[in-house]
Structures are given as structure tokens and as C-alpha cells.
Length: 382
Image 1 (cartoon, one colour):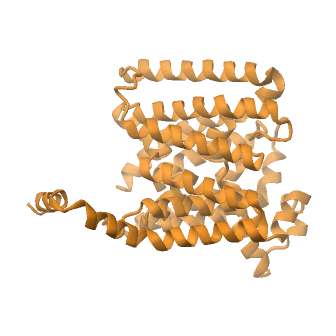
Image 2 (cartoon, rainbow, N blue to C red; image 1 turned 180 degrees about the horizontal axis):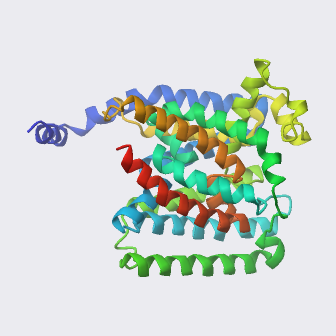
Image 3 (cartoon, helix red, strand yellow; image 1 turned 30 degrees about the vertical axis):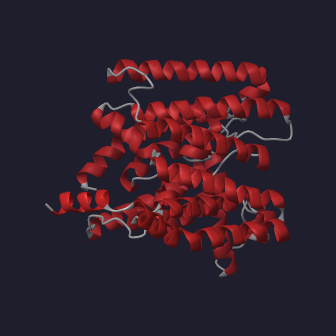
């Protein structure tokens, strides 16, 4: 009765007050974003200002389309519903079609390369497991925190701490065994890499079609997965064009925690192999506003806030055990994503779309972890 009444009331409400309420809610955010944009252009660089807007677009696309990498995988496993995964395949195909020519035309642009290693295998598996427990990957944690989901808001700092700790230990993990990164664009050229990638994605789509029994058709996929894939592909390609590097999430988290630990005197970066590297040391000494990943992460939060309702949606209260398991999963998400050289965004989306072999290794290992993570999620009744 109450739900029906609420729905009827909303349907009967005139459109003008609704628009006024929305703009009353969003106007301060718009002012803040444009103020930060102007300050970045004036005081930092035009590139950083543009990347902020790219991040806003990514956050808006993720939140408005509810483009959840984690839920897409879970629905495929639990319900044999391939719509979300088909949407992700479309995203990869569109982004590869834009990114690989850019890499071929602009040699200064870099691919999201990661070394095949034991670190990658273990990190991807653990990440796939934990993302199902916490109901979010790197981008999912960001946009759901922006939407005001309590668990994801609490997981965000745990993710950052985990990413930092993973970076501190990364060289020890790589010592277990690693090979040089392999980039298809370097090996095959932009055209050959794109052809190989699209063929591989087609094979994956056919495999999912045979397993799920549901054919791949634009009519059978909810529109949000289609336009969400298109929006994310465009903004991710803009990220590569403007920044000269693919879209990433995890590095920014680790940098935030590293800066905090260093400022508190808890960490000496000069004694660590990862953070004493000249590139990482420079970012650690600079303002966060100069870091590419941090700026886009801030933009993603703002884009998700734009979509968020004025009043946060009610969520089912979690028990103490659920909170403990969720926060531990959040820490392990950060730790494992650093070992795996990215999350669903940095390793899968950016890795595959820019021709990195490590992205193709990441996916099956993360999917194996997902199969276990879904069982753990059921056990703790998330």
C-alpha cells in the first residue's frame, strides 16, 4: 500500500517542482566542480582540469547506468543472465576500437601493461573473490560511495590502505616469478592488435551465449548496459587522449594512503623499492592535484554524487560480522588489485582495450575467484 501510494504520488507530481528540487540538490555540486575545474586550469594545468571533467563523465556513466562489473559477473553465474557481461564486452570492443589507433598514432601514449607473474595470478583471484563480498570493484566502490552506500563508503579508505600495502610488498611478490609485459600493439601494430582483440571478444561472447542459452542481441540487453558501455568507452578514450595513459583507479587510492602514512611519519618511502622509484617518488612529493588517477577518481565521486538522490536510499542494516567481513574484503581488494596491476578497470578494461596480455590473464583468474566469492557472499547473507 505505501509503496503503491508513493509511486502514485510521484507519478502525479508536476514536473517543474521535481526539476527545481533536483537542481537545488545539484547546484552546489555543480558550483564546486566548476570551481575546482577553473582552479585546476588556472593554477595546475588545463590537462588536469579536463581530466576532472572526464572523471565526472565516467562517474556519471557508472552511476546512472548502474554499470556494475561485479553484479554483471554475479548475475551471469547465479541467474545465467549474460546481459551485464555482454555490456562489458561491448565496452571493451568500443574502447579497443578507439584506444589502439590512438596508441598507434601517438607513440608517447602508453598502454596499461602489466607483467605476467605469480603476483598477477594470485592478485586477480583474490580480487575476484573479494569484489563479490564487498559488492564492488575499484570503480564500483568509488561510484557507490558517491551514491552514499554505507558499506562502500567505509570500504573506500580500507581499499586505499590495502592498495598502499600491496605496493609496499609488490617487489617481494614479483620476486616469486615474473616475465616482461607483452603489448599487442607493439607486437602486431594497431590494426593487428585490434583485429586479434575483437576476434577474442567474439569468441568469449559465443562461449557465454552457449553456456547461458541466451543469444547476444541488442534487443535482449537492457538499454542501460548499451548506452553505459558507449559513455564509458568515450570518456575512457578521452582519458587516454588527454592524459597519455589509460583509465586507472587503484594507483590513486594507494597514493592517497602513502601520502597519509608518510605525513604521519609511519612510512619512509626511500626505504621501499616501489615508492623510491623516481616516478612514484615524484608523485608522492607533489600535490594530489598533479596526479592523473587521483583527479579522475575525484571526478568519478562527483559524477556519482550528481546522480545520487537527495535522500540516500534505505539499505538493509548489516550485522557486526557482515561489517567485519566487508571491511576485510575491502582491504584485500586494495592489496590484491595492486598485486594484479589493476582492478576491473585498470587490468581488464584498460588492459584488454590497449592490448596488454596481462588483462586476458586477469579475467579468468578473477572469474575463478568470483565463483568462490559468490558462495562466501551467500554464507554471510550480504
